[in-house]
Amino acid sequence: MPQTYTVADLATHKSETSAWVAVHGKIYDVTSFLNDHPGGKKVLLKNCGKDATKQFDSFHNDSVLKKYGEKLYIGELAPEAKL
Image (tube, rainbow, N blue to C red; front, side, top):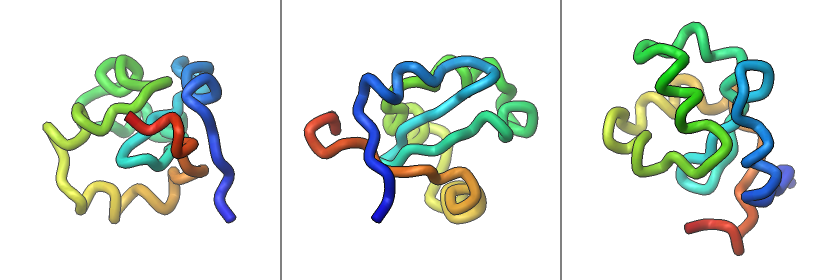
């Protein structure tokens, strides 16, 4: 069973040393991906520590999660926390 994280847990991970993002209810640790993000790490860091589903969907399609998701996935956003 995957680890479950609250919005408060997620909010503590928004720096270059610990960068987490929620997309479609799943939590991804993108710390190791910051320097590889095609849009630059600044835009990625701006969306870390919160649910970035809307921002993600505006610029990406499902193929991005298929390519990188498994490697970066660390758990689920707690059901009561989903917006």
